[in-house]
Length: 286
Image (cartoon, rainbow, N blue to C red; front, side, top):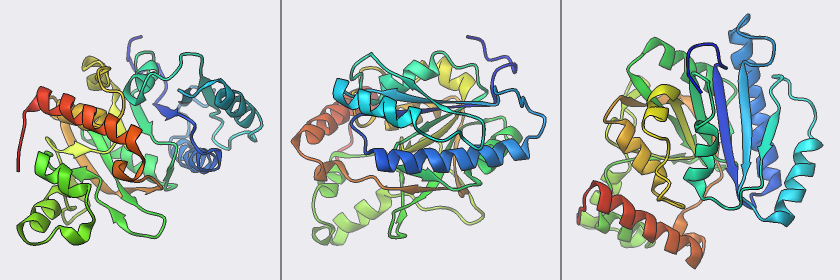
């Protein structure tokens, strides 16, 4: 589908797999408020319902899908006028391929990949989209994320190494001396002024606001990844064709956790994703 300015301003994909419906409700409520603010800021931009599209991509099994369908059907009408529409029946494709179902068909100017455990600040989309419209060379915007207890989450990372990934699996108290300094350097810090250029760095998939044209030109997420590192891979690839920036006024509350705390299945996916990433982009020991 061509991206010619006649499609929606924004499309959103949220991939779920047995995701907590309470957190998903908070995610959708916050997204609706951010979309409502964006619509208010864009009075006259397609008030007929094609201003934005939201897709909840259901990677879950049948029992979860039935509950998700009921949950979405029972939600009150959104203030923004943009309902969350399910995409279901395809099974568990993995995170990247699930998002690709939406990326491949959208005609929107911008596309947001959003985790179901992330809550946007009300002005997040206004600030992110406005920045991209003023800077045509920007292909990806990363958000400033905080945990529920108010801790800043540095979700933009330097190029990973085997040493850094190993240290991140250990308690922080064990990372001292040069190991601690290397680990700290992996977590990028925001620059003064609110705009940090992170082109060539890694960006978390919990929030990725793309310009759709370069995203589609790259084919979206690499389908060879199932879970983990597909976001790093895509951020690295889009950084070769466009600028990637981290904005302090695009804020997200994130309830996510570290892969090492999620059990052996997640650890296996993490290891396979890391192997794919390093094999594609190059190995670093330190």
